[in-house]
Amino acid sequence: MAGLAITSLKLGHFRSHRATRLEFDGRPVALVGPNGAGKTNILEAVSLLSPGRGLRRAAGDDLARRPEALGWRIEANLRGMTADHLIETGADKAEARSLRIDGKAAPQSALGRICRVLWLVPAMDRLWIEAAEGRRRFLDRMTLSFFPDHAEQSLGYEKAMRERNRMLKDEVADARWYAVLEGQMAETATAISHNRRAALMRLAQAQASVESRFPRADLALSGPEGAEDPDPANLPAIWAETRRRDMAAGRTLSGPHRSDLRALYASKGIPADQCSTGEQKALLISLILANARALAADLGKAPVLLLDEVAAHLDADRRAALYDEICDLGAQALMTGTEAALFEALGDRAQTISVEDIDGISRISP
Image 1 (cartoon, rainbow, N blue to C red):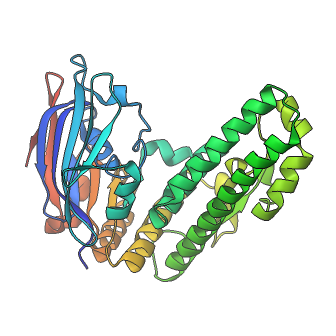
Image 2 (cartoon, rainbow, N blue to C red):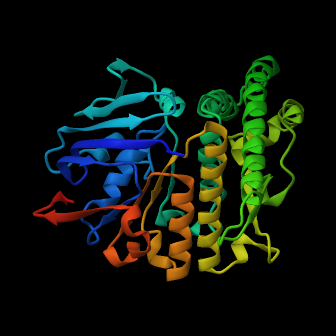
């Protein structure tokens, strides 16, 4: 099964890449070079071919190459789900990011309908032991991969909640205004909760569908401090009852923006935050692979995978197992590493590209 694939990628004044062009043949890609050469910048560019701010969540101004700061451009040819597409995105100096698909202006939500991109980066290694915000973001990225409208529902919820928070800070007392906003919040909260729970179910099914060298993670949603995540149907009553408390806090303290994602190392019965660093990394890899398998089953094509420095912290057997699962999926995985030896187990199943830094400019060689 051939997966979704970027067949060519052109970067203009993007991060360390002044003018870079890459050609891919659909196989996994090993991007090899020293730290700081610009390997992760290539992954970030591909991540911007999906909705959102990419794997670093960077502001637009930070994407432009320094010191020129002229703006930036990404152009990619995509082998999509039903057709090939040309994606062009970027921003001129001090202007908002633009997007064109097949020559026509498009909203970012349109990217989720023609492509799916999943990623795992070193910054996510502490996911299970840091604040809930990162876990919600991780969950919502997975959810968005299944439900392209999830971002729009989340934006609608946040917009109504920001207005409610403004009223709380201004100590507005009119219950009718609150009821209108809380009704809007409840409608989108119901969709958000449904999408999240459906995504968790698909991940559980995908983990149970194959034998993997990576441990199964049992996932569940909870509210703040581990409390039961509230039923969206109960949220209007909760918000009405807690307006005084929320007014004292100056913000809304209940709702899907406060949910947390809990994970259990299934075979050991140990919460993820109590696992070793290596076990936590293995759980993350397992979830990314399960997400990819579920999408491949649903769409008939595997998503594009971005795996930054993933091989460096795996032993040889685990690396080989990871590469086998990627190849079995038929996925195009862009992987970074400082040494070509990290990718030896892939053999001719992968395309190797060298990335170097020469006088502050990233250079590519096949």
